[in-house]
Image 1: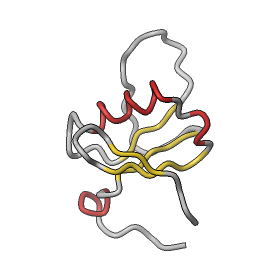
Image 2: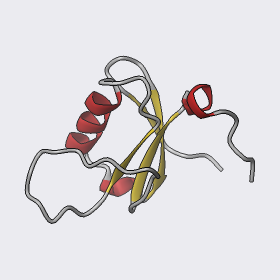
Image 3: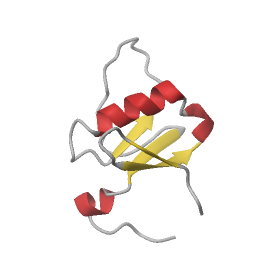
Image 4: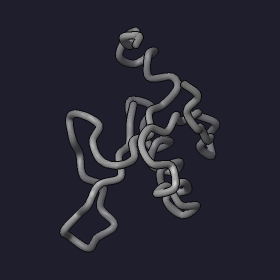
Length: 83
């Protein structure tokens, strides 16, 4: 399966799962900036947030209609299971 990808400003490749049309240009920019803040971040998710703030919420697992996983995630968490 060919998933859409994009690069963060620092050059990390993010693989997009879910509905890529929800990942607008401003959201892609924000995802790229966020993934570059800490090399330990392996995934980012777009989810509904009842608080109107510019705060990132932490979670233990990816969730939501759009998930972007760092292509180098295997370097962080080990080999991912194959489908």
